[in-house]
Amino acid sequence: MKRSFYKTLLILALPITIQSLILASVNMADVFMIGKLGGMQVASLGLANQIVFLMTTFIMGVNSGAAIFIAQYHGKKDYSKVKYIVSISTILSVLMAVFFWFISYITPEYIMGLYTKDPLVIETASKYLKVVAWSYVASAISFSFSILLRGLGESQLPMLTSFLSLVVNIVLNYLLIFGNYGFPELGVEGAALATSIARGIECIVVVVVIYKRKYPIAIKLKEFFCFDMVVLKLFIVTAGAVIINDILWALGQTVYSAIYGRIGTESLAAINIENSFERLAVVGVIGFANAATVMIAHKIGQGKSDEAYSDGKKFYKVSFGLALLLAIPLGLFSSNLVGMYNVDENVLKLGKYTLIAFCISFPFKALSMTKMVGVLRGGGDTKFAMGINLVALWMVGIPGAIFAAFYLGLPIYIVYLATLAEEFVRIVIGMRRFISKRWINKLA
Image (cartoon, rainbow, N blue to C red):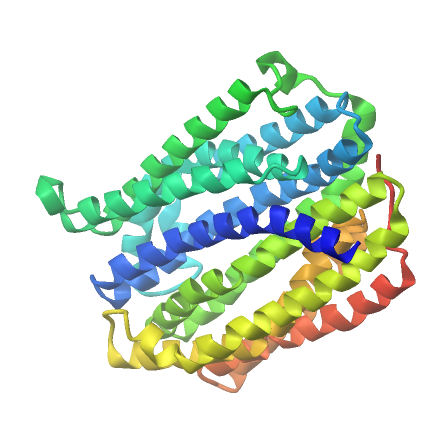
């Protein structure tokens, strides 16, 4: 039984982890290449990507909620309602992409002004947004189908298409940011154009392969506009909590970015450098958390609640241990890693200390993420997970960061460390919920 668990976990988690690693590598490549232009450009890219992050999180929230249903229907071998879930999630994703296109292309200066008072950062970030906004619809479609595929237990295709996107993005970054081989030297706008082209290619490949292989989510065009009211109501009640949670969580993360930005442009550049390594570090945890959602939903769909509970305990141990193993070398080599960036000495110093602060908090972040995003969601306990997540963020983490930054005047790395308090709230309350087994809900 234990061997079967780890075999299934590896089959599901490894491709998701690799895909997440690829996505994080895209961001790191952008930051690394833009870093050669200076700290201001790094800060601008970080702020602009907050809007991209918001859109991506909203879309992932919609489709993560949908994937819970897909996984349970798949576990039950009931594919008749899959098309309704696909239509709901895809239409919502595209509508969100259109909304974010509007604020990125029409009002970018106003949005960026909410994060920082530096006029040069606002101008540079706005230029990036006006270009990258054209990739939003393609990104929405590819993200939607990729996450729904995971609900079916198919994670290799999203991994491969993400790798293709990474290669295209890096090559075009090299050509368009610096003007190599006769291409125009576009700087930050070149990075945005490279991302847009890469996302477009990724979207085309994902859609073509899904329909060619005739996956259950490959519904007809007219079926995208067909809704079953019973399924829609159940989706709103259950997945609605996931969507609201992810939206408010993402807004909370952008509030953190605004706090860091108000501390100063150097602090903003430092946190952006730290984030490039943080995203690489958390990919394993993301893989395990997503695998947990699918595996637990499958077990509950099959009526094996005791096995779902037992698997949940295994997920906690694996995620905490993995994060600890990654955090130790990351902290030990923090100077060397941050030193790769071509920015001012003070930015490097702040980036190093902030990276060490992340290493201290990482095992607890991993445990919290697995609990909320993986196990409780997989059990359909989305409302409770949403409540704990948002209370910890908005009533503990954000007030603590504001107090540390603006009342105590502490440096960026201490402010970052202060946000760890929210993880302890999630861990303590979430563990009590897990032990009670009230998180196990059969949806299908």
